[in-house]
Length: 111
Image 1 (cartoon, rainbow, N blue to C red):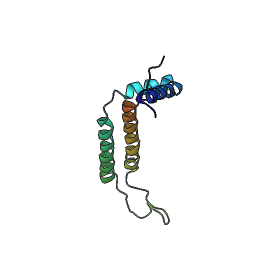
Image 2 (image 1 turned 90 degrees about the horizontal axis):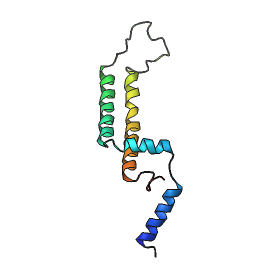
Image 3 (image 1 turned 30 degrees about the vertical axis):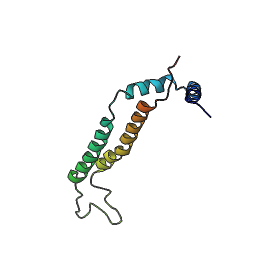
Image 4 (image 1 turned 135 degrees about the horizontal axis):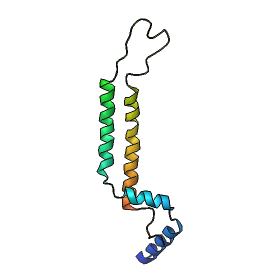
């Protein structure tokens, strides 16, 4: 049966073998300082901004000659789609931030 100390020793050896590079450690050190709420609020702001651009964006003009037969208008506000597509990316950054705070890539200090 594994004792707590044996398990901790094995985890420490594993962590020493799988150290991150200087760039990853630098990024994790900086992102760990950010509060997790920032990412949630940023994603919410992106959703609201996307909705605002969709509702208030330029409207298509349906005049003779503007749209020929077979053509279609691709959307009122392509910027709304662009902003809306950032929501999952921001949330994934927030998840990464939380994982760095909880576990970190280096469980032991780099020598």
